[in-house]
Image 1 (cartoon, one colour):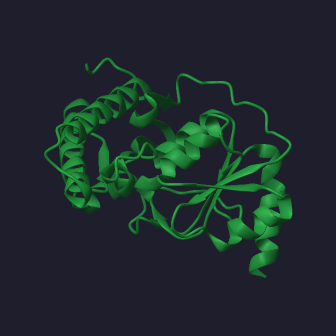
Image 2: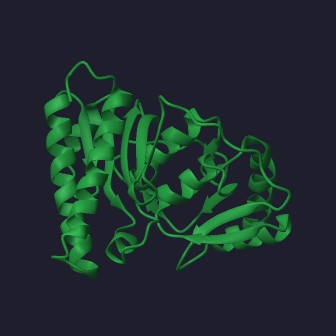
Length: 248
């Protein structure tokens, strides 16, 4: 890694290396369950934070696993990372977890990478893949444990199949990879859950917004983000209309 790297190259390299570190931690056999999740979170976070502070010392930084400070609020460029998105899935030795490295510029998720170590893949904003066309029967990714009521209702209207999945990043990248078509979430997240996935999804031409259609804004004092919609542009209007009717 060098200072000459572009932001997108840096994000992708960091996400990929953190993913390899996490696989090594898991493969060591020294931890299991919650202890494995904790060890993975701490190890990957230490690497990502140190690398970003070395490579982009003037930028702000927000990580799920580091204490937040107000310093980032005065920065135009803020790196937002989730060392292990889907810690439960990682600890259970599943594949549906991810590493998020995103860069928000003036509040917009602009650059990023999402590593899917279980699939040996890194999706990034500077190297685009072809998003396959939607099938006749649409597929909606939802939480494994608490599917959003809005998602269930919209799926019924569309005749869509529900696909339970763990990590938010894994769900978002399932749309990019053509494994699913709509990701509708209303159970609450934080900025690190979606910054990198949204940057990647936007780069691939997908629709990304709040479920009322308003923009997703990052680097806020309160990092809580209530909801999220990622889908193909042709599905966005229908989904937003149906959600509005459900909530009216």
